[in-house]
Image 1 (cartoon, rainbow, N blue to C red):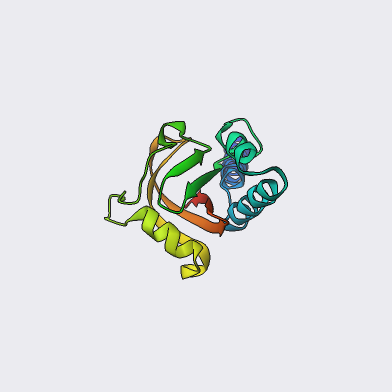
Image 2 (image 1 turned 60 degrees about the vertical axis):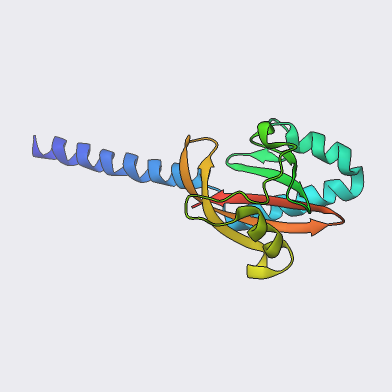
Length: 153
């Protein structure tokens, strides 16, 4: 009986370890978010603004992977494409604050211009988990468009 219990506990430990590894593999990294922005910028350079906006808005498109998605803004703070929430497209969010009072869009613009190496930290709803999460978002400006992609920590 003791040996059976030992095998059960060993199996349980292996299962729990593998579950944590699988869960960790689903969480994207800062490097992956930054690479997604670079990929979107390359697509934009090759295909133009309209095609890029359409691809970003396509939730099954090339800019929507796991918990990563691209958001495109104009420089006044208006969302022009959003990989997770099309309801935000066309909305100016320059005054939008997170639950801690962070002026999100203003921080994005400052980051894209070089502050904090392009990164902004704030609270935002997680699109896959339906809960408030800690988000870090990478931002870059090309022409008059800001590209952003973030991770949940």
